[in-house]
Image (cartoon, rainbow, N blue to C red; front, top):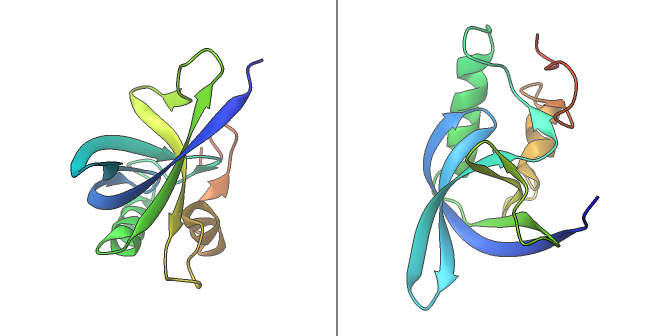
Length: 125
């Protein structure tokens, strides 16, 4: 098992894909921005077809839009990133919004996500 090393970036919202997956613009410094898909670490939101799917997706988009974000991705000792398919797995902090804070925790508290480590059945199935 390799140790995950955190990498922290400022980011801004580009688009929502579903309740736990979205695309962000990452500030790489020196006026360089790059878009990447991100999946929230440690939670799962309802999949398409579930009654809460659209509500979770809309809430995520609303929370991320027009806000400063701090995103922590995790790099393994081997040099590879913790990824889910082609998406970076990350923690997302909404800056200046203490009632939101960590996006994953906020979505759980709002009933739009359940804690999930990526192993075993999806909690919404």
